[in-house]
Structures are given as structure tokens and as C-alpha cells.
Length: 463
Ligand SMILES: Nc1nc2c(ncn2[C@@H]2O[C@H](COP(=O)(O)OP(=O)(O)OP(=O)(O)O)[C@@H](O)[C@H]2O)c(=O)[nH]1
Ligand SMILES: [Mg+2]
Image 1 (spheres, helix red, strand yellow):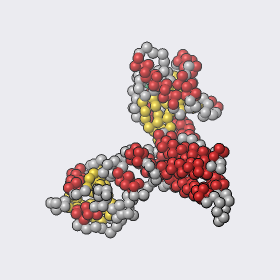
Image 2: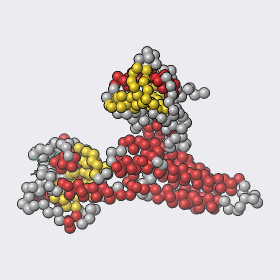
Image 3: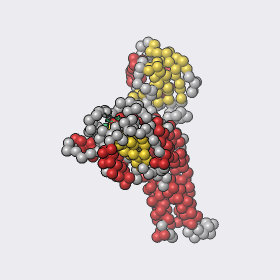
Image 4: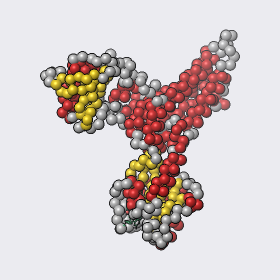
């Protein structure tokens, strides 16, 4: 017999001191703990104002709100108590000290409440991942996608797929078991394979949607690159609205890649400032340039900054733009940003014809120093991001893990449908079993012990 499940507790709200601290207690003795603190159990799911007393000394620790969620109809699927305390450190430690003294009580590990909800069948794995993403969401688009997954966008679909797959498998197995019996219609495998074919196409479509759902979790990467002293760091600081990068009149100031996270019109954007690209003998600068080129090459968009005032630099750099060229090779878009417009003879002229297509060279004129042209750039970046993430509304896949399980499923279905297997019902059934297993792994129904640790370790304590 497995040992009795411990009752776990943790601070589920932010770092104290705060106005209100939420402490969660979950497990078979949660109700006992609440009774020990308050002398009674409130009505389920109704807030109770109560004096919390130290069960040993009977000293009043705090006046708090207590909620009682008896299992199995609680969020976690077992008895759960939520205490809303005044968020002082001494109050929280007094409550924790009292809980620690109770038998079979211990502090929760990161993600342990959610893990119990999963083990109690309250959430499938795709919903758990949606919950983790919801907590981590920085932008509206990320929040929406996470919420869709918490509500079962992928989990429900995968479960429906698995059910129809199992129905198809049952038909094939019936054909194997009763090949010649009069009360079984002639061909069972045929209709089963028609279902499998439809399934395979739906899964292939989900896999073919591209990686926008995955990219939305990480953000669209925009790399600022260009020759030294062009004003790349100044531009980053402008867009970030803070002094994230050092700006100096000396060429070769930036060495490491500097990263800031922006929310552009509700979309997550990772903006990178990189070392100015030029021939250099300095090994540190060389390394900076190597990193700059590598990051520009893997960015979704490169802003190639040039100094409008410096014709010589322009002449050199527009014809020699390694970051831009390698980015182009990797399929990224690239825009030319003509900086220091305040120094140029003519005033800013963002000729609309010069940005006819965002996938072509887009020309932007601005001054990172005065801020002229920055709102226009932000506007264009926002449109670009909206376009880039446009299809995420329907994105079923948000993680590599999900993609791998679906790819395994499709591969098994492809094999089941292969010409060479037709007539071999035993082999077809085996492939369908493998496909069902991969779908089961996706939602956490089968052999997932190894992936569980990876998924839950990303949670904070108290969730
Ligand atoms: N007049 C004017 N000066 C600017 C503008 N943008 C940047 N500068 C100046 O240009 C110099 C270089 O700016 P940085 O932002 O450090 O240039 P960088 O491209 O990051 O340079 P490296 O990191 O060395 O590659 C600084 O003296 C800035 O103040 C601008 O729009 N107008
Ligand atoms: Mg710089």
C-alpha cells in the first residue's frame, strides 16, 4: 500500500510584505488544519471571517478570511483550504510554523498543487501547459492563447481524436476476431480506415499550421544590427523607453547582445541590440560581432541601422550588410533604418513607396536622438507583429512536446494507411494502437512520468 498522502501547503500569492497573502493547504488533513486554527469548518466555498489561533498556544495569529473547498469537487480534486491573511512576514511564518508541526503536513514543491489536480483528473497535460503559460503571459496575445489551451482547445480535440481512433481500432480488431461470422458485416476495416484517413488529415493540418503558436510563447525576435556608432543602442533605448543599453560616441561600444521584452499592440516582441558590425582585430569585439551576426540571422526581423549623416558609412554598409543578407537567407524580413535624421540636410521623408512590401526592403527614416520618426516605426512594427502572429487564434500547438506527440501519431496513422499494409489487419491494428498511445501521451493519459517532471518544474511554488 502506498503511504498516506501528505497534506501540503504554500504561499500562493506574491512576495511579502503585501496587503493580502493567500496560503493554500491541500490534502486529506486540510480540513483538520482549518478546524485547528479556527475551531470550525465554514460552509463549502463560502468565505468565513475568522480569528486564526495558534493550535498549540491558542494565541491569535491574525484575523483572516478562510475558504473551504472539500474534494473531490475542488480545483485540485482533494480537500483544499485557502487562507487570506494579512500579508506580513511574521503572520505567514507563524501559520507555516503551526502547519509544519501537524503530522503529515509539509511545504508544497513547485507546481505540486497543479500536479495533484492533474493526478486527480482535473486537468489534462495540455491544460496544465496552458495554465503555466497563462501565469507566464506578458502580453494579451499570449494570455489569450494560454487561456484557450487552459480551456481545452488542444486537449479536447486530442481526446476526441483518440476516441474516434479507438473506435476505428475496435472495428479492425472485430474483423480480426470474427473474420467469417455471419452476423458481422463483410468489411469492417474499410470504414475504419476511412475514419483513420480523416483523422490523419486533421492532425496533418494542425502540424502544418506552422510554429506561430510556439513562437507566441517566446515572442517575435527583432534584431537591431548595423555598423558601429549608427545609433543602434540609442534606438533600442528609445523603443524600450529606458536606458537598457550603453550609448557612447565611441564606435564598438556594444559587445554583448542586449535583450529587452516589449509589448507591441498586445504582441510579445524580443528586441535585441547587437555589436556594430565591422572588421576588427579586437578579439572581444570579434566575438561580439560573431554573436551579432548569429542573432540577426535567426531573428524574425532585422532592423539594419545606418547613419544618414554619414554617407561614407551608408555607401559601405548598404552594399555590405551581412546581417541583412544572412537574415534574408534564413527567411527573415529586414528593414533599413536611416538614423540621425536630425543631422541630415533634408527633413524626414518616409516615402510610402519605399515601403511597398514589408517582406521587401522597408526604409525608415528617424532620429533616435530626438525621437522623430519613432512613433511611425512603432506603428510599422506593431503591424508587422500582428501579421506575424496573425494565425495564432487557431494554433493548436504551442510546444515542441505537443508537436512531437502529434508527429508520432501522424507517422503511425500514415503507416496504418500505407498500401503495403492493406489486408494485414494485425499490423494495421498495431499501428493504430501506437497512434492512440501517442495521442494519450499528449494529454497525459499514458506513460508520461518522464515528461511530468519537466512540465511541472516550471511552475512556481504555491501553484
Ligand atoms: N545626432 C544624433 N546622434 C545620434 C542619434 N542616434 C545616436 N546618436 C549618437 O551616436 C553615437 C552612437 O550611438 P550608439 O547608440 O551608441 O550607437 P551604436 O550603433 O549602438 O554603436 P556601437 O554599439 O558602438 O555599435 C552616440 O554619441 C549617440 O548619442 C541621432 O539620431 N542623432
Ligand atoms: Mg551600441
